[in-house]
Length: 221
Image (cartoon, rainbow, N blue to C red):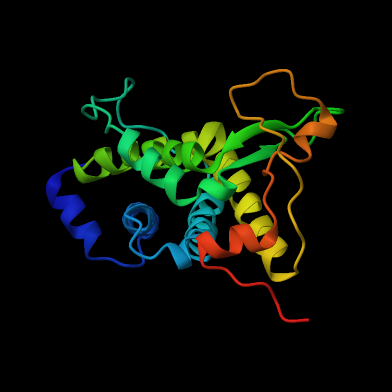
C-alpha cells in the first residue's frame, strides 16, 4: 500500500486497519508505562483492563476472513526490539504473582498444566505486536493485518488469554479474601512438576502479602 493510501486510511476512524492498529498501539504504550513502575498499586487492575481490550482486537482479527499479504515473502520489518528491560521491569513489579500455571490446550485430554510467567508472556505478546506495527508504520497495512492475525492464532492470542485468566485470578483471590497456596520453592525452570504441585504454582503468598506490594485490598466482610 502506498504512503498516500496509508495517509488516507489514517484519517478514517471507521477503517478496520486503523481501529486494530489503534488498539495495538494503545496496548503497547499502556504496558510500557505500567512497566516503569510509577504506579504499582494499580498495575494488576490496569493490566487486566489493557489485556481485555487487546483481546477484543484479537477477536475481531480472528473473526475476519484471512488476510492475504501483497507479497509472497514477508518484507524485512527491521531488527526485533530488545525485550529484556521490559521483561525484567514487569518481573520486579509483579514478583509476588509473576509465576502462574496454565493449560495450553483445554481440548487435549489430561493435559497437565505448565508453569509460566506474566512478565515473560506480556513481553512475548508485545514483541509480536511490535513486529506487526513495524509493517503498519512502513505503509504495509495488509502485511501488518496478516501478521497480527496469524500471530494471534499462533502465539499472542493464547498467551494473552492465559495472562488475562491469571490477572483475573489475582483480583479474585484478593477481593474475595482467598489466600494463594504454597509454592514450595518451585519455578518455571523446573520440569518435574506434578499436577498437585502445579496447582499451587502461584506461590506461597497469602492475600495480605500480594495485596500490599500490588496495592490491592480485599473486600470487606
